[in-house]
Image (cartoon, rainbow, N blue to C red):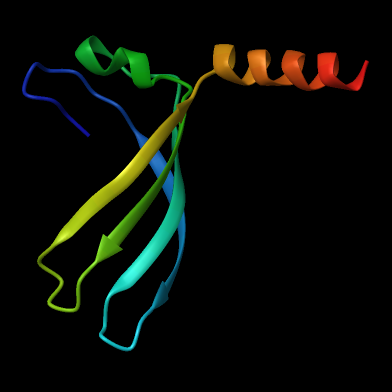
Length: 87
């Protein structure tokens, strides 16, 4: 992706969804950003974004229902919390 400020970030994503009888698809996925993000998108380098979205039958509307950014720091803190709870 490219921002209007010139930043760049590359990612791959995987998503699993299900469709409802009315044609709406609700899905959950993860986007994996590589380490080469630049400029004002540099904060996305080596980040995993977990998200949930909804896609309507007409295909023209799609919106994010929530995103959680998982960085090395967040992941390390969660591991430490898990280790502490086991002690």
